Image (cartoon, rainbow, N blue to C red; front, top):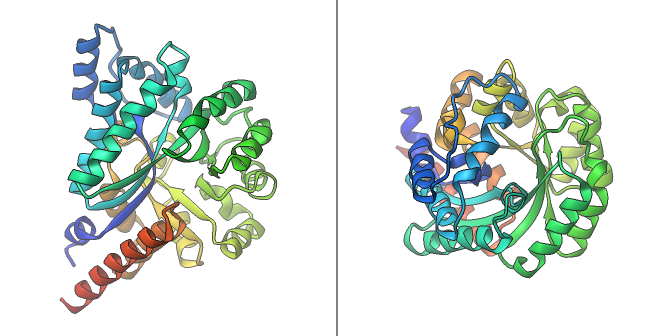
Amino acid sequence: MDLERFVADMPKAELHVHLEGTLERDLLIRLAERNGVDVPLPEGGFTDLTSFLAQYYPAMRALVTEQDFFDLAWGYLERAAAQRVRHAELFFDPQAHTGRGVPFPTVVAGYRRAIVRAERELGVHADLILCFLRDLSAEHAMSTLMEALPYRDWIVGVGLDSDERDNPPQKFAAVFARARAEGFLLTMHCDIDQPGSIENIRTALTEIEVDRVDHGTNVVEAPDLVDLLRERGIGLTCCPISNGFVTDDMKATEIASLLRSGVRVTVASDDPAYFGGYVAENLVALTRAAGLTPDELVQLQRNAFAVSWLAPFRRDAFLAELEAYAAAAADA
């Protein structure tokens, strides 16, 4: 099998990608010049989550106008179309922008305009997921949720990202309860090899009762939680390449083990402009590291569509595309 061709042509869903993490260097420079903003260029060399975030947030200062946010999302969506991503659920961090004076409507309108155009011109369907920054206060998160309510038709769910240290899920329990009451679906980053990883995953699953978990690979350390994931059909959105930057390996063995045990593991790109791989590259890297079979690659995509927040009619249509692709590949 030509692995790269098989992956490239396979219909895919990507459920864990940060729009601000798709800010490629050439676009960053162009936006900074357009807005007259002095922005430090990321240098790489990340050794952990903290060192990554120290370069990630300053780069966002180049994003100022609605057109900037459109250009950022459009750039990702064009790359997604080229990798045959049929559906993407896109994280965005409004607090990183509103905190420096960019209005919430400016951010969400730019992203939304790109999403509408991408479905029409590229054949890529996408939804937005608003992420709260966990190293800010719960009160700030709640006020951001209130700002999002007029746009609930544009935002399918809410998540939680940024520095997990000393910022456990229960800090935001009231915010997530209000978000669920307002009709949003819930996900939450449980990052790799962080202090209290298992306790945070347990809280997210049993107290916050999230619909999905982002990263979460440390769950292999708690068989009862693995059973819970499997019983509830809850997905994990894993990002192998970024794992290898912020920890000592990409957790390929753990991801493959979870997949083979029946957990609905998915693979995505996280912050591809910083980690050097979009979803196809992540799938290829994981396959080479863990020895995945073609059937397992297809199962990863079945999982992604199954745990996506698509309307059932769209999910069924995309799954039918995937099954037709798998059948044709098997007959080739």
